[in-house]
Image (cartoon, rainbow, N blue to C red; front, side, top):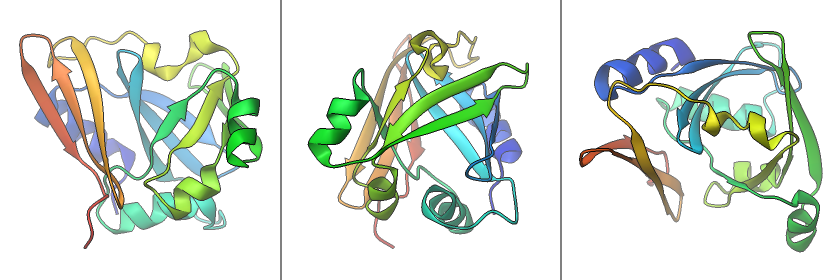
Length: 180
């Protein structure tokens, strides 16, 4: 079952992408790490609490890990989650985690149950402090400066993410959105 550390090591060794420490999502029993990508980001997630109920997000993380890993879900960052969620009939749920430095990061999500059940759908996220959004953290990736990130979503969820690097390079990471 893939865990964060070996995936982070492979992203650095194989693609020159730096992963930074995240923290614990105590409400879900998961732990994360972040790969900042110039305004976007990849979130590496593992089930950290073996006693956490395997429902919703935690179930999706566990299922994708058991299948060998990959892009499990995707989200759409919004500025007014209340109205965006209302338009879709979603409930808004707060999220929080403690960073390795002790600071607290908080956000609100909507549509997580829908995205977990149907990964072609995004869940919505709004950061309580937009300046703390993980994709804006400055890192020096050995692969070079990230210019653009493109997510390819198919009928079964995320197919791949393509990361364009200054100088014309491109990194492609596989998803889980292909039928087995």
